[in-house]
Image (cartoon, rainbow, N blue to C red):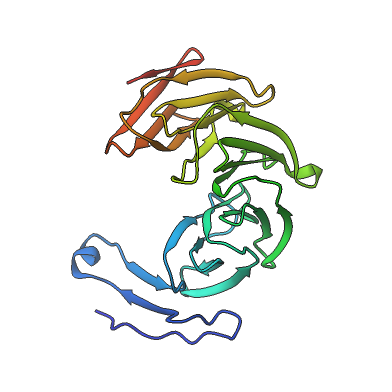
Amino acid sequence: MQTPTRMKTSSSTKTKGATVAATAAAAAAESGIVSLRHSFHDRAVYSLAIPGQGRKQCYVSGGYDKYLRLVDVRSSKVISSLKGHKGLISSVTFDQTGNLIVSGSADCSVRLWDALSGTCTRTIGSNLGEISSVSISGNNVYVLSSSKDNSLRLWDVRRTGCCVRRYTGSQNTWKNFIKSCFGPGDDVIVSGSEDGCVYMWDRESGQLIQRLNAVHDDIVYDVKWNNAAGLLATCSHDGTVRTFEDDDGSLTQQ
């Protein structure tokens, strides 16, 4: 078993208590799993993302300290410390290539970052509320943001971060972090809501096409869609997770 070691960091990546403890527990070793513990943030970490393809063996994380840390897993070193947000970072994701990072913050802005250089390439700051989630479409064209002004916004990355659509109807106020995602074929926008319902809009028209009423007995915090399986999963403050199957264009509970 390795003893925890203190990692040397450059001035650009040094943070209070930035240490890494790499410990292979006996039980994990038997199953072939090695657990790494990284402490590159000095406060709570709220979100992280792993690239689906492109860049390998890395992740990006963000939280209360307002920094994004891009970390190489194998070397346990910070590749880049991305600074720019003025508030806590609530959500972060990669695009499909792994070369673009999108982050959302309590400072009401969405930022786009070049993962290779660690520079911010664009700031979208016309949201009216704190950002609760960000996601990017499969073709890397659209960024979807949820904010605490009871609305979701669709941004066209090709048009200097222009807001091309706004979706309303769901409830997302200052009290909670309600998340959204792209649904079937990236043509549908799906969101949780404080009223216990799940809302679905047509991406292009912005029209509400389906509302799953009383899905949960309390706030629906998060929604996830799996294109390959045609499956929607939701989770709630009521302590439950529910799944729905795509049945000829409409969702039915399993």
